[in-house]
Amino acid sequence: MNDRWKTMGPPRAGMRAGKAGWGPVALAVVAGCLSACGGAGQGQTDEPPEVFERIVNVEVETIAPRSFTRSVRLTGVARAMNDVVVSAEEGGVVRVVVRDKGRRIGAGEAIVQLDDAILRAQVATATAQAQLAEEVWQRRRKLYEEDGIGSELSYLEARYAAEQARGSLEALEERLARTVVRAPISGTLDERFVEVGAMVSPGTPVARIVQTASIKILAGVPERYALDVTAGALAAVRFSVLPGQSFESSVTYAGATVDPDSRTFAVELLLPNPGGRIKPEMIADIEIVLEEIAEAIVVPQQALVSMEAGQVVFVVEGDEAGARAAARRVEVSASQGNEVVIASGLEAGSRLVVVGQQGLTDGDRVRVVGGGTEPEGGGDQ
Image 1: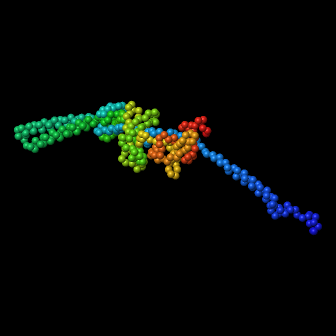
Image 2: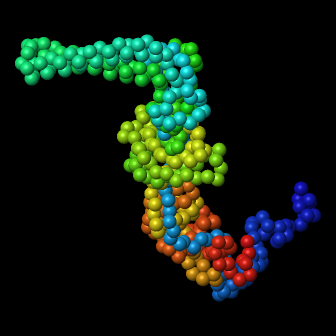
Image 3: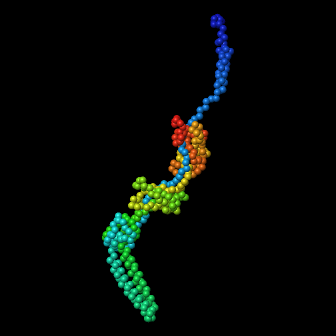
C-alpha cells in the first residue's frame, strides 16, 4: 500500500482546488467579466429608449343635422268602405231578377222582384175601405159641426174609423213596396244568393253589395305605442301586389281598448280607390309616423360603444398628422332601424368614427382611411 502511494505521488494543486471550490484565479476571471458587462450597461442608459405608438385606421362621417322620422311598421288588411248583405223584408217567391252580380248598382235601385199578387189585392180592398170610412167621417162631421145633428160618440167613431182605415192602407202599401228588394247603398252587386222561383221569407239574404270607391285599412298596434299612435297620425300604405306605389293616408280611428289576447289596439285608415285597384282583403304594409324631428343629430347604431359609464362615441380631433380619437359620452333620445338620435354629447361638424371604433381608447392615434379626408399618399392599410 505505501509503495503504491509513493508511486502516484501527492495530489496536484489543481485537483485540490476543484475539490474545495473555485480557486483564486477563477474568481478573478469571473469578477473581471462582470465588471466589464456592468460597464457596458451603464454606457447604454445615457440614450432614451425608442417608444412605439400604435396608429389605428378608422373611417369617419361628418355630423350634419337632418330630419329624422320615427315610425312603426304594421301589417293590415283592406276592407270595403261599405259591405252590406241585403235581406228580404217581405216573404214571397222570386219572380224577376233585376240586377245580376258583378254589376254596378245605385242606391234605391231594384235587385229582385217578389210575387206581389196577394198584397195588391189586399191593398185594393184596404183602399176601398179607407175611402168609405173617409166619406162617412166627412158627412158626420158636417152634420155634427154645422147642423148639430147626431151624437158626439157617433162623430168620434166616424173620425177614428177613417184614421184606422188610412193606417191599414198605408201599411199594406208599404208591404207591397217591399216586395221589390232594393239596394240600400251604391256599389257593386258582388253576390246574389237567390234565383227566380226561390221562396224567401223576411230576413232571407238576397244579395251582397260592396262599396270600394274608398277603402278601409284595418290593423293592430302593439300596446307599447298607445301614447304615440292617435287619430290624425300620418301614415303610408303599400301593397305587395302594387309594386312601386305608395298611398298617403292618416289614422282615422284609434281603438280605446287593448285586445287581451293579441295585446294590440285597433286602428283604421281610409284610402281613396279610384279605378278599384285595391281589392278588399288585400294585405297592406303600413308605416305610421310616431315622431318627426326637424334638426336632429343622427348617427349609425354601430357607432355607439357600450361602456360601464354608459354609451360613448369616438370623434377624430386634430389634423391628419396628429389626429387622435376622443371619447364622447352621449345620450340617445330616439331610434329607428339602424339609426339613433343623439340628445346630448355630440355636436354638428364632428368627425364621427363609424368603422374601427370598437378597438379605440380615448387619446389613441388614428389614421382616417375612409369617409373623410385621407392623408396624402392615401395611408397604409
